Image (cartoon, rainbow, N blue to C red; front, top):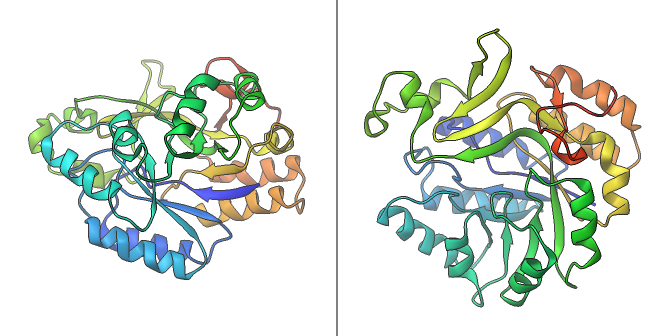
Length: 297
């Protein structure tokens, strides 16, 4: 199995992004996804900036994939999408069906976890149109994955979102702006204040969700480190780590060691504990509520 670094889902300052990807060039990841997937107002990097970083990571031996927005709301966003899909150099991760439509029959592509691939018939249909790798939607279980893998088309790889806060939903409304009593069109880029999202608690004070602009995420961190043997048995090709603002390199090192038999699952789980500020969750993988933690340790 190969290890992938997913796109940064948060809004980080330009210097922070540059430093992150400079470090990523040295990390033991095989694939790096680049691009803004949440909000087009996040402009720390422009299109040419992403291409420059892509070139640098390619020179460092990484496979680079350019990621698209998961929710498009304006003609300007569609224009950027068309340009990205027609880049002619790097494979594209389609995060909505609009991107799938633009890429179908024109270039090989990947689907991200926000594309609802729920059955083998859809996999076969997209494979005929150029799908090379699909990412299991985060809400699906290992049992569903096993069914999908049994009928997976030849030449199509499977990727699993294995670590990071789960990207649950997207909305036309900006929750971060609303939480600051600001209009979406005058958000003042307040997402920059929350490099790992803005935590929401229940009335009882328990961590519940994280808001990230127009995106809602899980408060605990999805962690499937103990499921590597199961994934390998099911024929999973790629394991995805979603970036966080701190110690992502350590997370990658632990997963790399586990993938290559250099660290037992229990030891890896223990090593990851201090890197997850609100604990772990793995409920979706086990077919129950996503916020639950089923694995022991």
